[in-house]
Image (cartoon, rainbow, N blue to C red; front, side, top):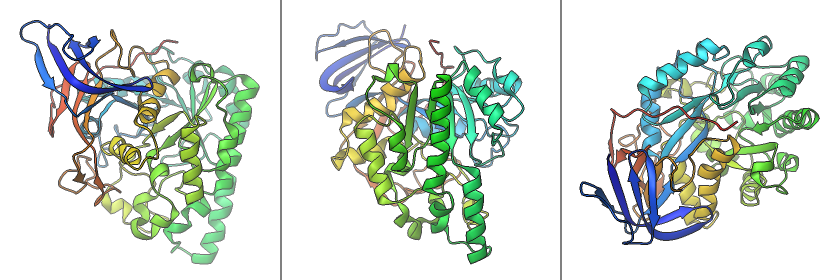
Length: 447
């Protein structure tokens, strides 16, 4: 048995912050006590966490780690190392890889790859198409995080635009539906307008006008109405507009909600004025929109209209991103910097530290019914993150771990720094050093 004692940490968990000691035995949290009250055996490693925050490990419910088939952009080994350096201990990966994850065979292959390459815990969505309803129904609810439906096209062609198929999926799905919502007809109409105006030289700041607020609201409204009609467990990903806040409520505890929403870090941080300096580096789908939209998303998160914060981590190479608007792909790398970016908003007094932990750790575990993770509780897996809240550092190419080698945060100075990340009781990231030999575990779901 291996054991680690973390002493004098400021533990942030379940709505409160307090000073305490935490004992890890093998993979599990064994004890949480007041300072000096934990008894240990000889051979226990002690970590003095005075002045440090001890958080549950971040659970990121939306990433694109690009394996298989797109590994020149990123792969499970490279991106999970970056995630570990950012305090993330578990991820859920999207199906628009090559081949697409739209069969049980392809899904099982991704689980196999992760078991050999991932340094943190993992799960994978199965993807829906217009043709694979019966295949989707074969998934084991206890083994698979969810069903991804592209109700708007993005990177990779997985658009589900057959209403009969959508209704069947919403009616029959035994696992949560995670939906990308942008109305394709509106986007195509807008794109033609701007092509006529600019030809092939559309400015990148037109992106939120092409993939417009109306496109998001129309598609999200349709998804919500379907979910209400069929009593479906629906989770709408990467909300980006003020209008969409009308579709959600905060009148029930998360455990009882059937319709939930996610916001991504980039939609809380950037706004459309940033296209001038960052260009296609902040080209995402859905698009980053106005300050008004960003502020509405922030308020929605504060008021529990929005339930989860994630990254939509989606790396592309610098060469790909440097193309003209029509050729530059959407998406960007975020997992290494998502927690410190959110903590920067805490330093700015926009969010409380307890709210950040709720939205990035507790709520993903509740929403997806993850077994034994997401909280600092005795008997839970020891997925933990130690953060120094007052150790400023600046993002640069020298410290970026993404395979693509760039970040939209380059040049940004963050006040907080991730010191250690612990996965299943094993220290995977330790003051800049990565344990590249450790492998994470497959997430399980209580469904």
